[in-house]
Length: 114
Length: 113
Image (cartoon, rainbow over all chains, first blue to last red; front, side, top):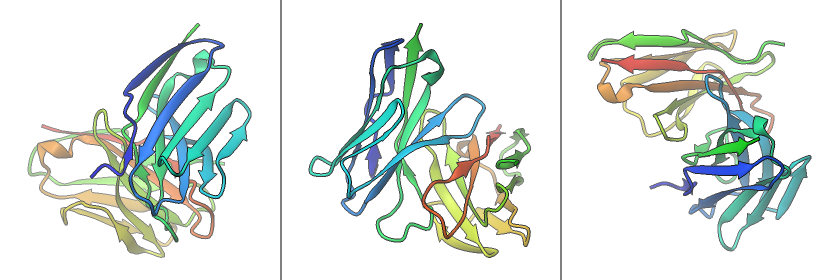
């Protein structure tokens, strides 16, 4: 049972435009979500997070939106830059006390063309 | 400040063999988790160690075992290797009293032939 799903394996955008990466979840107990970015030959690095008490969190060019009723979150990157080309994962810890066990989506490969 | 380090970078084994992967957490971190990332998939949680004990375990067989040392470093052991164990193995560390953000190492690429 894939509790966190990223249904788009890849996304290609032009530099300067908006990138929108989507993530759906099925577990209603999830109350906190994280986005990680991964470059080849490197481990995932934390990008931005959102708690279920919010519907939006912004950090510079990165904004995450959460729609709890739809069990859907999205990551917006504006403006996109070639250095943003990477694999993006959404992830969620178990509800309540997490102890750090994260459930990841399959990832979306973002390519930003100059 | 060194981040999470893992060794070795790459490893090739044959079916039935045993392997040990090593991880040093980020300075100040006391909790280590291990993840398996198969090609084209997201990382899957194997287990987590805190205070030298396994605290949580994902859906992995007993062939996967681990250890945490007093200096918080950790080992992942896999016995009786199968072809399907070929993957990138990621170690992540955090402070147990901190949030859910985990810091990942670059991983060990294991190939089982």
